Image (cartoon, rainbow, N blue to C red):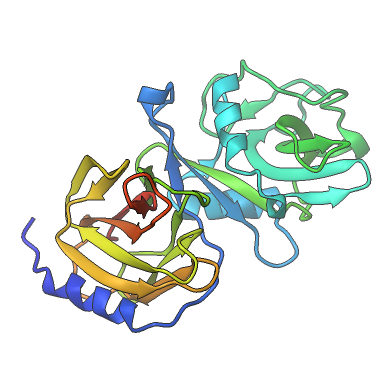
Length: 301
């Protein structure tokens, strides 16, 4: 694909002109086959407002190009649960926590409480991870799947819940193919926590792409590396994920080690363009003098 880098350069220059902001964002995480995964991608999504019911969660998952996640093995269930540790994904109640929606459902007329359960994806319903006493079809209308914390805010076992219950604070989307924004790992840290790069928005004309770095070097600087291909070579204890086609140097970090750069995606860029992003920071506490965030791969729409 032939593509001028001038549009990307303009985008990055616009990004560096924006101020520091603090926003919550997320992107999909690859479950690598090299780590025993299925090659799918998973995205934990926080609901807006007071919460979301199962129908709206699945509608949004479909609009994103995926579906509510379907944990068909213990390993997959554990991986999905690892993405929703933040308490903000959970609704606290007196007996524990109501967790994010999953892609399990029980059609009308099924034998209660165990009959007819199936996955949205059409995969066989074999593995289950019901919490003690579940499913119980409480109130006679519980036909959708979610995580449940029993006498704890979080838990990786399952509960049946009413389809129209809108107390849930999030859901997990599964993608068979790579979605527009993917976390590729590669981070390295010094004495502090692991720097985290997250992305929101989209690489699409009229949309805004936002890259947010957290847990960087407090009051330090970060260099944003952008490539139109991946490199994935070891560097200073981490992995340099992008080919360094463009480097935006010395972006200031606040006292928490955070920065956010954002800009409208320029028009005229064809769909399917791939770009890789990563932050690198001088870090005197790191073994080789540098810390780095994870890399993110984006695909234009």
